[in-house]
Length: 359
Ligand code: IPM
Ligand code: MG
Image (cartoon, rainbow, N blue to C red; front, side, top):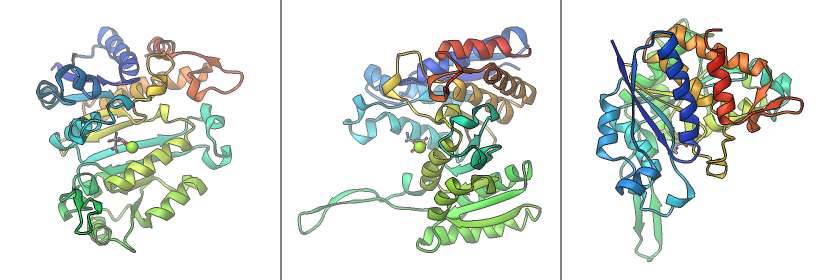
């Protein structure tokens, strides 16, 4: 059956990197029997410019109907002064909550070819392969009440609410335990249970779920210590499960261990494994339109889509191997460039991956 893919390029470097991922999809359609139909729609700042809303109804409808969503990036300085409801980031948050994408998988894998691109010593990061499972539809990101109020003194006070219900913790914990089971069977749950009630409950629920996964070795870590351990000895981790805001921060940190945030894909999944796939790097307005952005995170996001939503693991392997071969050929975009390598731009990198597919 033909699968429908919603393609939402978005802002900044989004359209450039998505373009390369689409080249990969088209090659797979032409030569590998992939039955897929692509439909593109506007999201983020560009949607605001055109429709006065960052997530037009038609885009949300398309995303809901599609079997999977491929998203580039949203945001840019130009839209930072808009009301919060109209900012590009709000489109992303609404897509996540409307599609109920509660489990965000962010792998941080260091390709051996890039060991010297990391700012950490090669022996600290060589062979790194960790997975952050970030809860994506709860926590302080969505908790009510929120706002800015004026106190009796006349001073203004900003407030947000950190919330987790037991079922929200349980379902993301199950995703994380199941993922650990397919890997090295180690799960570290990260929270701040020494201070926050939300985190205390989080830990209780994780411990309860753990009874169904006795083959997985579970540990708990406070988020401040986890931030430190990630740079001190990142290879101690296999799978990390954590809440929305802690996961936001730790996943950027984990990304940098690998040398470049330009390499890292992500999957955001619902209870039935329908997903939205996006590179984690964001819209990078400083390099947008220059043709220098690294498209590999987006291309690797397509590989994740085949693995998690479209049940085509051999196509996922095909893409991942093509990326590895391109790195073997010393091709590098600026973000992962080191001396002696061959510098290529966005489309040069995309074309190289396409030419390696199935070879
Ligand atoms: C991410 C981003 C988003 C988040 C922003 C753009 C809303 O930082 O996907 O990590 O905070 O979740
Ligand atoms: Mg982030």
